[in-house]
Image (cartoon, rainbow, N blue to C red):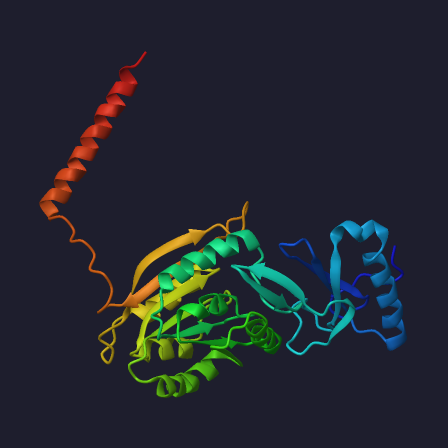
Length: 332
């Protein structure tokens, strides 16, 4: 048992130390651990660190294959630490390796990475097959995390530009491009709604106005900021968007904004195909992948049958259902 108590967040109390533990396991079995604690005086933190490292590297924990341990200090009420909360590396490697789609990704304790590694590969393969960029295209990777999707498609396009809010993830994305020998990808830290509107014209000027643009977006649960949606919609060269979403509600809201007709935009996006991916088995949550294309380029759907045929088909279905019901009732 630990001599350090569990954190108590109640108003007027805020005592104790231990808060949360986050573990990540890679496909090769190695595990990284981030322990969140309340701030302590330096001597007390050194004592806690020694006890923690000893416990996680003991013979009893050998099967866990822990290769990296970090401490995160958080004095707030919520366990969701504020950006810039102190992060201290106390044991092992600073980053862990995650193999995915033939590439190796180094991720830090705060970097976003899909939790279900096996299904993640299937999701990304489907998303990239729908993105299908031209070899001379610019691919925008919005909310790029550590660069997984963009780096996986980099060999199929002219250039990848990634946007990400978390600076640590951007540094990881740049490092991941380097360790995989990818030179046509660059990454920018900051809010996408502030970065994209100014960045996009510069990229188009560099690559040429006739350059095709494709975008893949993988936002957090609240979805995309309205300024990001406006920048994407107003880019005439942007031909298709692959939207990956962990929240169907915000996905619907964003798709409405991308597809609704306005007086100054006669070529909105239209949804073409979608698939749900069961990233979280035994829960009600699924990951959604949706392809949107410009209305002028999207395939024309087959025409609906005439109303007479629809009414006739409906009547036949009702008759068949009634016959089946009669047979069931007559059966002994």
